[in-house]
Image (tube, rainbow, N blue to C red; front, side, top):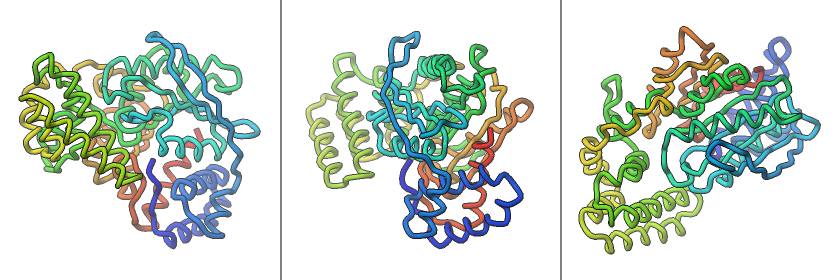
Length: 387
């Protein structure tokens, strides 16, 4: 989660406006939610410091290994001092740093400081920018392991949170028979309802509702990486994948260190020169962020890719637990209509809480908006913290 840059005065006024409500409605959980938002925003100042630290705990961490049907995976456990009200599994999006990704670390720490034990599993395919059905298996197995550990699942239940594509995968896992009775809630943060529908959007820029929204090149490049074996001769697959991963890594670094990112982007451009055609042309489109060129080349190659129910909540059994769907209104990696569609799909089953907000982009809180938007975000987290 990127640092929120919400206007300081709006935040403070919004938090102060909670005073009357705090006295009559879910005071503890509202204070937790308010403090969490302020911590996530990285706000400074006397009032922000007081509200952000109210009822917070020091946090300890330990690294562990979780057994799964696909072998051991790394994970980190964040434990608040004095015990927790609820434990949650928090799965990151597609990122080579996995559980070490700074925004994920901050999010897990901020949640744990509010009284929640947080487990962040590291899923190997996501480290390699690959989206595969076994990711859902790994999330399911991590939940199975977690609920069996003494002191983690206080009532035999655990929350599940997923970011970006892991949001949709977490939703699928939450509906699986082996764990669905042990899931207290599931949160999809910027996630998808139908994986194939997102693929079509990224290749065409056309949302399911007919709205044109130019897609982010990052999402289009992810598709290329996942289906590169359908586009180039076998001897070009690994070199092209390596070059694409270099570009994606530079895109991550660019959010924290632009000079260093430019060096990595330059390396990706040098790697392009060493590739033969057709790999060179594809990598040139990556390096120039030419979504208009990549989309039409990828779209015909998507047949069969992503068809598995394990990748799409709308093609899988629904969770029995409360569902929380949080999405940025302007998201152009996974458009917000995905959460709206999933909410409608689940309407007859699980209790659904949907918030599409201008305060976030793609799983990153970094917008300046009104006090009402902040209040809605606080209420969303207050409901989740009450589970």
